[in-house]
Image 1 (cartoon, rainbow, N blue to C red):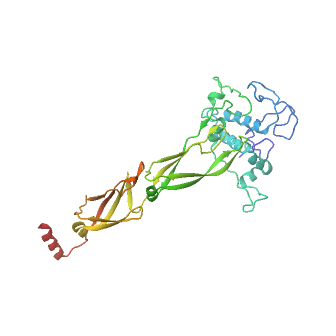
Image 2 (tube, rainbow, N blue to C red):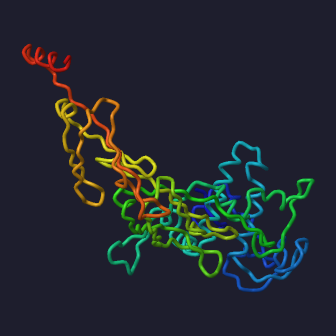
Length: 361
């Protein structure tokens, strides 16, 4: 990664990455230590029209970063720049903005350079972990671009019909307040048949980016989402938490949606509101009858008499022993019992003769 700021550590040959920081009339770059008020060349003043140049503004590194990224991102976006090195430059700009727009990351970079930023730095007051976690860019420059401009096609707003750039009032992107919501985040929620039978409460911890009060910086925070699973819910049931995704400037956080999936059960298979059970019985019981013992999802033992002759297509229905109905949990589907008949692997001649005489009669 090339250096992020003119004069900072690690400044490489590709020095244009956020290098177009506006210069003050006193000759000092805005992020310098000079505190004298001066004119900023090429930067419109706060709250004034975009064509005013050379207006008096306070020296602000944050605004310089915003101005520089806006200018260069529009210039080197793949839709505008067709050079072979354009995508790499566009990604470098996104990484630079990601660091320089965050006071903590920028402070580490200015003090310890790229090695300290990516490799971690010692934390004076840490007890368990004496080193900070190194910075890793997410390698998604389009995400940075969309969050900055708050839309998928900023060129319609920032470029005139002839392709020339239209300067907006200084102070931040998307000054007209247009917002865009990120697409929903969809995750599966696996639930056992027992929990779908009785109902339960699921608590899910998520980590999301939360904006600070300054509207520019953000932190990663954990949050617990609670889902009250109702008796009878089916696979495909969707639970949506609105606007619980990552926060960012000029975006509406994405909705988080959980989709219920059923865990595989060792005894039952669910079909709609019914439960399917496969009983394995020997041929003798299939012909002579038997009593089946079936443990239900709520822990009861059913003794089910089988008095019919069980052929390969036969099944037994036990009403009201299936899954609860979501709209009325007091009502339940059915338990459908199918049979896997075990045939003997060999028979003695005497048994065969006896079976023939019995079955032919």
